[in-house]
Image (cartoon, rainbow over all chains, first blue to last red; front, side, top):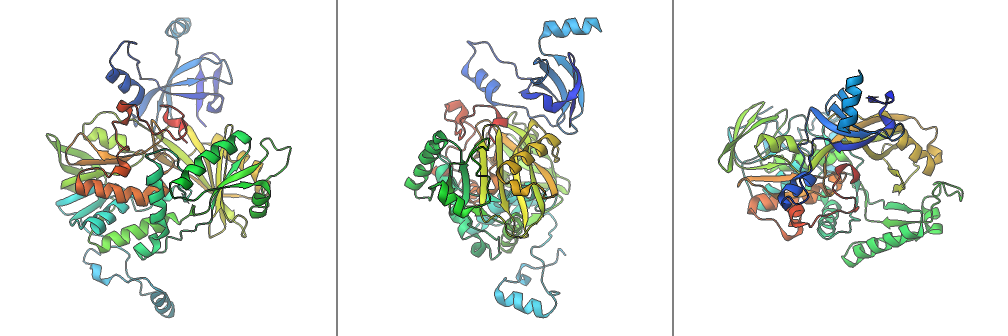
Length: 94
Length: 430
């Protein structure tokens, strides 16, 4: 069981969370070229090692989180709120 | 053992079993050689799984190719070849999948004779349980399509199903009461290790060098060509190179400097129970709502079953506990008699989950590199046809029409082969 330290709820089992996906994907502007959209929607780096990904605490605060996790050992090195404003506030409070 | 010659190989037969039985089973020869890698081959297949071995076999058998090597980083049968639930079926619906999987099933039907190796293919029927009129309508559409394209498929009502599999949970107050089943009688199971060993032995007899403990660590390019592969057992030059390393395709692709692929690596668990007396004669599949479960009984008596992915991306060949619980819940909900059966082992394999749930057998941006990848959940049943068409692609440098849609450009064209209609999220294509 992976344990995720939710910045809102504390450390919980990963079974409380839903996996989003690759958090490094940046969607292009709506009027960007078809190639740019193709690459963002369909292509993945598929990192073997530390990657940024999104998880949602569905059975908790329902917040989306940005998690840095190794795809080999499953070790988590950082967890932040996805919302950049919320993440900044939480960090400044610490 | 490298001096061992192909000609010493025994052809397996009732007579050879009898003779070796009388002499205490001491005189069986090696099943395949253990050659040192040569500095150069005409064709190098990276990946000694079922797809790689089948490809090498059909390259030699169907296309008369010589000087072929298969490079395997571990041992044969140690990767996904030995980490599946051994189910073979062809109940695919989409154009692009339909003809391919049907051809695979017809190859399975003759595979033991073809390879002179008993792969224990058992056409015991594949039974997908149905739980609602809508599911029955969808199954009717799918299975009628299969029949119209020359395959077999039938819909069973409840009395027929009860007569065939009497001990499922038929309670009317079950969370998802069973109302019937969609059945493919020609589907079934095979012994996964035997498939790897059978292809390896047959390919070896045709002169293919199968090189184990040989990991590719680098791909050297000469412009738009792969010139040589760096491996843990030295550099190997190759005329043509085929990648068949499902689970780790992205890594090799990046070693070749080719960027990103429409693939994520996820892991799927499978389970086997302690051996039981004969209990289940068919493959039974339960899939409704959030549940996904498939089960059969091996010839040793173990109940072999599996469920969903572990849901998050991973290259670790070990499963997580929440899925063990999910699968156990599904098992006891449709086969309550398994409640006190003990689990013997569970394991996990890393697989290529593609963006539309379908595979790739295609040319690549490099002129002498070919790709076989993206098998999602379905790699085991696909392996004979996958090898067949990948060999054809490598030998003739053009895809057969049957696999013309298994290319990387289909996402650009907007012609995805999304059997589940789940969209571009790899973890949903289970």
